[in-house]
Amino acid sequence: MARFASFLVGAAAFLAGPALAETRLMMVEQSGCHWCVQWHKDVGPEYPKTAEGQRAPLLRQDLGAPLPDGVTLTSRATYTPTFVLLQDGAEIARLEGYPGEDFFWPLLGAMLDKLPPEQAALQ
Image (cartoon, rainbow, N blue to C red; front, top):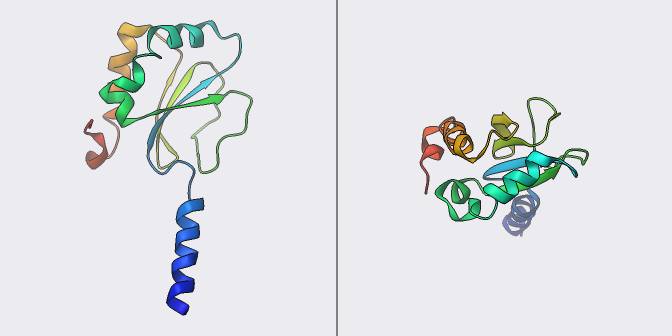
């Protein structure tokens, strides 16, 4: 019986565990942000189809909203858009602003390179 109770506690912890137990790209944005709209026009439709988007699925976050459970940032985002690479909810790297599609992809690649070696390879 004790083993079953231990299993239930472990299962509950797993199901309720950190909200983000993987690699994610959190985009902090706000209503009326011209550069956020531009990113969604330039990159948004293709992002989930790319290797980068598969490796770090997008998590949209409103600038004024509380952070999702389990997310820890090194500092509060103050500019929009701000792109924060998260690993298990912890900030790994950040890009403030949207420099245009031609610059976004290499900068995102440099962010992904900051992941631990076993996490850095794009799938």
